[in-house]
Length: 216
Figure 1 (cartoon, rainbow, N blue to C red):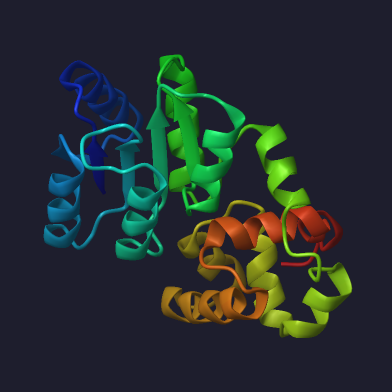
Figure 2 (cartoon, rainbow, N blue to C red; figure 1 turned 30 degrees about the vertical axis):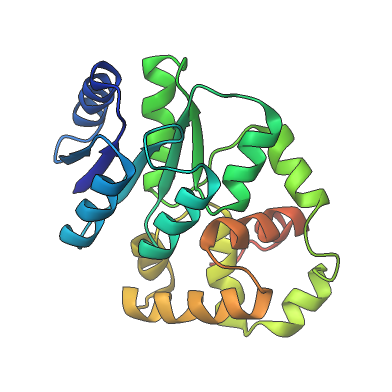
């Protein structure tokens, strides 16, 4: 497992590295101290499993940096770390494609729990931010329209995404290859008009599909 940590504060980066290594025994940590170096590492390390990035590091340019990283790592969990905790900042990181948000003042155990959740395909944002994003979401998304738009298998995949399952777990549950799961995800994203699994999961949760469907 390879995890990128990009933060310009050495002490915080070292502390985060210790949390990662304690949480994931097989983790190999790749480090960067600015946004340019983070992009170099992303291009150099083609098998990054999760990226932890400081919202305020040099060169990041806020939400533009998150969007750039998301474009380079379209299916990789991306966690934003920030000293800012205001609602609009967190909401905008979600809009930009982040999978999770960690305030820098979070306790060690809390950070570890968030990283485990995100690495396994889940998302983590304050509940009030999720609710706000749902309110601002596409009005045409209804339970009936999504069910009518997706094939039964695509709907099965979406439900498992909404439950926080990773691609590997979805493949095992539905008896598919991971490659087939990725193909289904691409079709789901296009059908829903979203760019990543975070937004797809939010649609699923908003419509209550993960609760209502008890099949696979």
